[in-house]
Length: 248
Ligand code: PEP
Image 1: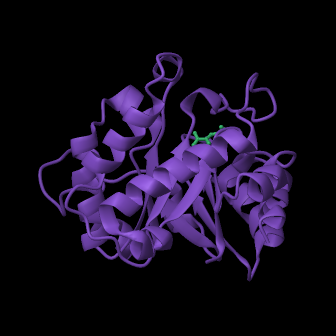
Image 2: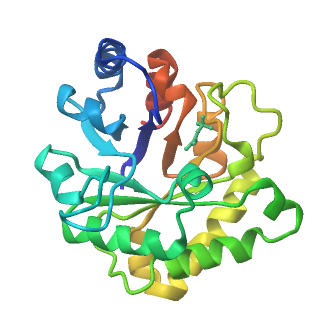
């Protein structure tokens, strides 16, 4: 299974011109036969960009109808989008997304034939209270409840307290690769309990939280992550392309 590197641009940049410039610079440097690269820009830039695999940062669970402001999986599919990030911590935090809603979204994404990237992770308070494993287990069991995993299901484990506020080189505390590996093994164990070893092994587990050009190789080699969800560094083409190279 190839490593997967996903760029989450979040609500950036603020113009079409910048979006095209960043995308073109990534396209020049990030093409790789050995790594799957997915760019998730804001929805409105999706139709402007081509030449790399595209993903969306969110979607709704209904196909169409009276849901002001929402975007459906079929609309994304029609645009040629292949991946959808579901349950990102910022959606959970700012928009109150619950594990039950995440579950509905995952089902809709799979029904449309798109590849979901399910985000799970503990925040600083949950970490301090020693609740990390309980939180991850609940997010997986409720979020993936009743879901049959197909060929291309990804879990992105994000230590929310290690997510950069935009600058992935400024984050004060980062988990060691050993700690990330331990948590990834825990997640893999939960997935094995839910689906059996064969299916669990087909699920990619990628890591998110201030991944940058300087630390990517260390995480890939020593935490054995299968790729990254990249926020801040994905808006810096040279850094992002370096992360892709590290994953080859
Ligand atoms: C994220 O929010 O998904 C993320 C990983 O961001 P960053 O790389 O900026 O920490």
